[in-house]
Image (tube, rainbow, N blue to C red; front, side, top):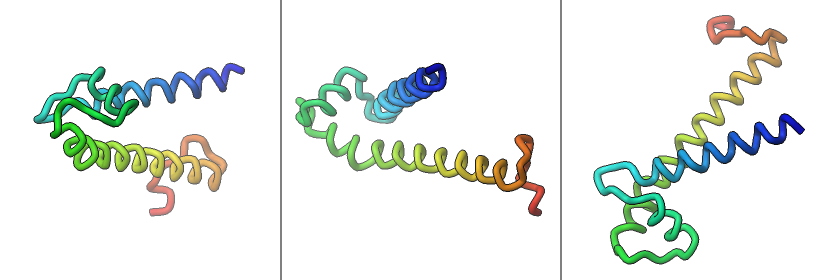
Length: 92
């Protein structure tokens, strides 16, 4: 049960940081505005969907995918060499 709650907390932190990441940039967007756009799909500002869908959301998805790929590679190294302290220079 402890592992499940830790995973839920990690996903909640990821969701919170993701919403904050969508709001930071040259065109500032408040978190409530982002959440209302995500829930309803409409916005009072016509530029908001262009900024979020065209620039910030692809950047966020790419960052999450890259982080997941790096963690998966690290877990694969640890499993392959059966060493929790494995480093990338083992294979050269």
